[in-house]
Image 1: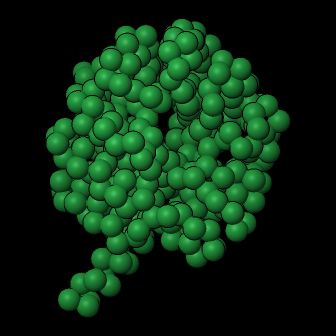
Image 2 (image 1 turned 90 degrees about the vertical axis):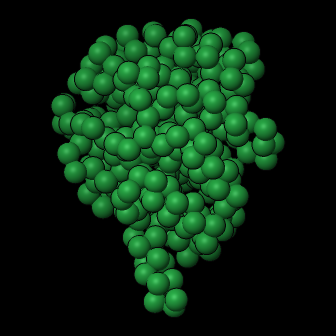
Image 3 (image 1 turned 60 degrees about the horizontal axis):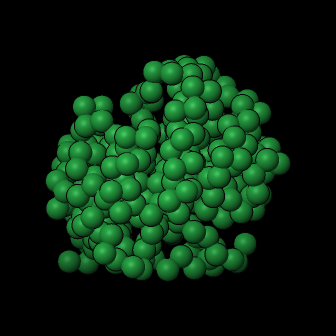
Length: 302
């Protein structure tokens, strides 16, 4: 496995939007710049969604404008509909993300419509983005289980992935939203979806609710997947998953990959600094095991 892996840092969006404490525009920009400074050059920075629905993402246009001057990085924003797309384009978005669920129950609870209808809602968004030369990434949630429907069959994920791929998404991120997956299930899922979308265009977005995320990522890497979504400090969670501890922590992913001889280009000391600062702003400790260990080591040496 001694080849490259691309990390997509989702802490500033998928992480912060599930944190109770809002973070200011200036602090979000500083967080993103610290992540880039640590070597994470693909970062999800905001969401053009209703401020009433997700107040943590308010003023994402200002955040995007604040970081977009950097030419060394790729910044992603989530866009749910045409109105959100127009705002994202006006703010200078070069990569947007659309999302669908693999389960009907989660789709209805999350966005108040079924899977097919949700796809119809963002179909014109993808068409407009492609016409404007803006790249589109597709997210699929609940790929390994749903809090409402229970087990999710791989074929349901394959069906949604194929639609997103055929629409023109350059990459499909497979989200274990409530973190219930285990390595064998992750392996089978990736193998199934790779029949419809090339493995090189699949990303793994695994939450760590049951402590399985790293094992699931390793299983996916054995199948050939080479794109990993993660959040600094394990930020985030899911409002429909009681006890969810959030996304797999970027620090834990980097530690595993570097220990396997896979260079990530991430400076762990700088990443630790970024995570500790945002954790201070949120008034809660990071859930990353690596952060906890390194912070304890620093305290012992001081």
